[in-house]
Amino acid sequence: MSKLFLCSLLGIVFFLVPMHYDDKWTILMGIITDLISAGIGDNMALFTLPLFIVSAGISLVYYLLPHRLAMRLPYARHLIASHWSWVVLSTIGGLVATLLALGVGPDWIIGKDTGVTAYIDVAGAIYLIIGLGCLFLPFLTDYGLLDFVGTLMRPYYRRLFNLPGRSTVDTLASWVGSSSIAVLMTSYQYERGYYTARESAVLATSFSVVSLPFVLLTSQVAGLPNHFFQLYGAMVFICILCAIVVPKLPPLKHIPDEYYPPAGKQLFEEAEGDHSPLTWACKKSYEVASHSPSPMLAFKKGFGSMLDIFIMMMPAAMTIEFLALVVYYHTPVFQILSYPFIFALEAMQVPEARAAAPGMIIGLLDQFVPAIIAGSRDSQLTRFVLAGLSVTQLIFFAETALLIMRSKIPLSVKQLVAIFFIRTLIALPILVAIAHWLF
Image (cartoon, rainbow, N blue to C red; front, side):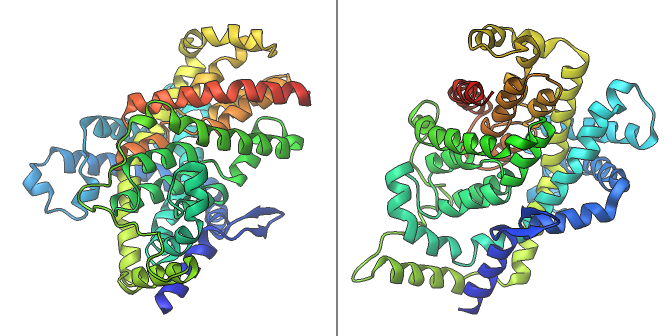
């Protein structure tokens, strides 16, 4: 019983309880992240660049060694790349990080808008958030909290979204924490048999929304600090609408309602016998907590997940962001690809349509770039539309899409791209209508 209350309480306090700190609302994970970031200060490069360089070396060693020998190395299950493309992206990241550390190379590689942004500024923030998230996530998922909340919320979530009640906590962790933490939670629950393939795919692509602090940051970067509440309200409305509509369309509708085969079905939220929903929730949560590992084993498990993301996912993610920034700032590729959107934006009377059009598609690679583009526009209407897309498209390969691909959730690159454009087509006219009303 003590594990149920104390360990779950730690998870709740760390991820879910809003706290007012330094004149802003955040969560304990955010406070600790800010304190560590402040302690590192201008030396963030000394933290991130060695990680990219070491990660490249480790991924090469683990991948090139004979499989039987590599499997004997520490944390082999987490550090052996499933595909050569992960090793290539990680190696590129290590090479660019080396150039940044030495301060040599052309400006399109080591410049402030490209290499520095991807491998130092953005990487530092994500490393801290995901690192702490991985370490403490088992306390939110493994000690009965999800079983308690899920049993009580089952009727409402089933009726509205056709999802288990325990997914309420995934959604809440995303809204107050970060979308990456929600994807990790969803993947973890799928592999343990609590979500079907369809449910995990829907949650990862439609419910892993950006957090409140990120929306606030987006509004500031986009030059709309006085319209935060309007932007947040638009995001809430669009994300709920997409969560209802998108799962009913291909490709999500075609994903089977089957549990992960090695785990089988482990979800039993329906009350049995004479139990009320509350007593059944208490019973199921106590059963889970009584069979849960010790806190030290939970930290060890979280450390393995952290290594997987630090060594395999993050170098690939930041390399994708780096390449996106290079292509955007130094080539006309995105301007050419986004040409059809110019006519759509002009038809909807969005100012600066030609300059704003690349923001329609570049969010597929990194969700923060549309907000950066918005900040350079003169029209507040255009800024609002781009900032709104930044927080509603959700699928981006610099983080969430790669997390999904590293997981067992059965979603391909083609399906993720399709979901991205479906969400964009739903969100864009709504955002334009709201922007015209506001401005």
